[in-house]
Image: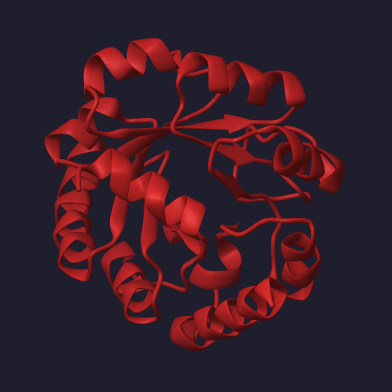
Length: 219
């Protein structure tokens, strides 16, 4: 199974979508945090570090690529297409102001997944037309993990995607253990959580609790 199929299969199947955020990780390194995520059963990991030097990001991504491959997990790089190619990531995730999907496809080829952040029905429909493999839906709630984040889109947009869009999707933005039941009840099978996971001392215990909530919602 190539990276593109692995990513879309895992997102559609559902589960926790993990992201790195070292400044919220209680002094732990990204490899330490991702190892705990993988041990807890997270099978999709996105590397998102906006401010690090490229050399440092490259070394970390090499380590994370090896770890995720060994665990049978998908590894996605945020924004940095050249970095994703250099470390043989399974996919790349881009935003509305990054390169368009067609341009990204010309660089990464047919074997890697392209995820695209969306914030409105119009952007979701455009993502389908452009050939994105999955979309990010959010921010559902207010979030402080990104400096350039748009206003929360709420659960109404999530409802639209569940009802109208056939692409796999990841719900993201301010999702916590305390509101995950509500988000899952609106149809989110693959939620992304950042500080709720990387900022807890017990990552394994936190992920287990989140998986229990998702499992209960499916029943």
